[in-house]
Length: 368
Image (cartoon, rainbow, N blue to C red; front, side):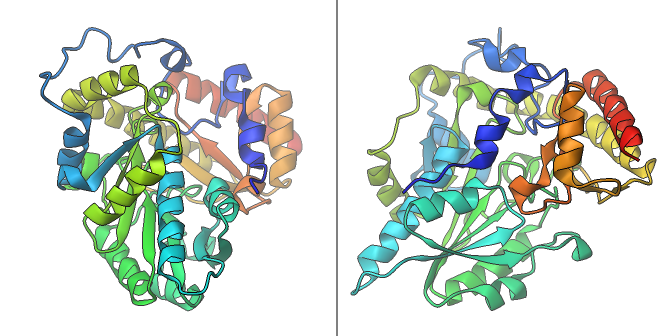
């Protein structure tokens, strides 16, 4: 019932083992940020008032009511809950049990197809293509929607390309999905990756508050606090209430993580400003690296610290294997439906990333 997720099996242990990490997409600067019980950037910061609840802090960030928020054990858990709740709702509303139809973007992060399939969904795909910058096209979504598709899944920023989509396009996509009788799930863990913060959640655009939309996020990617395993989903009251019931079947969020997450949100302005400086620097490093090479095709989108790149000398697996032989971690594109490509991510401190890009350049030179 639950298939192997090849990417998660492959990546396990590699960031810690790599001399040069160009695979981790969370802005954690150093490996110690995951090992220490209290992340260094939270140590010594004051606690919020005892009356402040994490659910309320997330709700404030998304400009919604606390009843629209469910805090979860990471964004992956939030996505599982969102998918399970949507598919469960479809079964409850269908007179004759039928296989739920789920539409997922392509290319995509592998669990976004593997998880709904494991939950009994039949997966359909729609394309986000290199030719048009991996933009989200509501009409293309509409053309791909199956009859009675109960759920459509997208990422923003797009994973793996880094393309960022504004709220207007998200709203138009949600309209198409709703007209077909379904719900839109937007995984927004990368949405705050921007050097020009907007009036949305944590500085990035959000689909939160749109009708029949569920949004997921976490402290892992932009904040860089992956060790806390704190995530959330944002949806209408009825969906959140049902998701809470589904969550009884899954692990709860540990109280120490809740406490540290409350501290992070209490100091979010300070933390976000620091992370945006890192985004700006690492984006420029990656963009310059790609611009200066004639053996890599692809776009480093504005504000993105990761990109889907196609080497001209070899396919993605060959390049990733050659890089790994030299202690460099890049992710083969086959895990994102793009076998000719690699995903290159700059989540560590700039000095580490600069050295890693130089080493990766040498690998590409040797393959030429």
